[in-house]
Image (cartoon, rainbow, N blue to C red; front, top):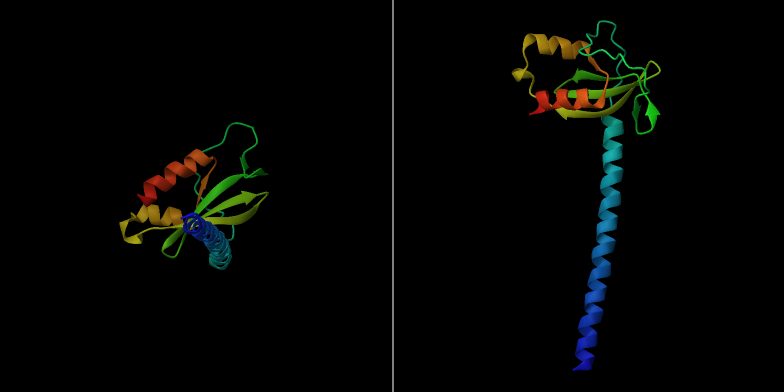
Length: 134
């Protein structure tokens, strides 16, 4: 009886170790794949001079994203997706993209997104994305 209980306990420990190892391996592979895909999918975007700001920033407090200073977010149409960029001292850096349906856009929205839309806070960006992706 004790021998059988010990075998079952050891089998349980072995299965737990294999499960944790599989989870860690899967996490690392998925993370590397997402980083590689985002690096490949990040198109380069030149700053648009005709960008129509939808919001103005009147406060002088520093805006931060992941601990870095930034001037504004730029939302721009990139094929069948809208790309979200952040501007650091005049340089735009790709953050991520959202799939949208261009057929659902009005002509005005299409033109604004083609030129790029500047948003000056994370809450404005969140609200904007909720409008266009829901």
